[in-house]
Length: 150
Image (cartoon, rainbow, N blue to C red):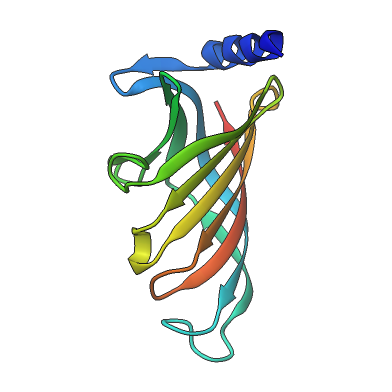
């Protein structure tokens, strides 16, 4: 088991760069996918259901500092923020393996209620599949995205 832990550490370290905020393990860009939007709030009756969803001008990366993970987001203006520090999110690794890294991020205060994200990074294929569930605020939806990673 220790061999696998060292193998993924070496693999992820080879993909990342170091910053003042920790080790950037993987960086991903524009995401596209599908979402199910729930009626209510800003979503008028009859307008809920399945839609195409995308994040075209953003970027995010997984950062590891010591034993802790974080997700750093960069918006279209290249402003950055940290899931842990700026949004008070709980960020944990659900799975660390040579072929994948699964990260859970729970934002209790985001959007006047909450948001949960689950990322499945596949470093060998340089991609991520991720889910975002927004259950607070004026628009409630669950999205599944795919993005290419550096």
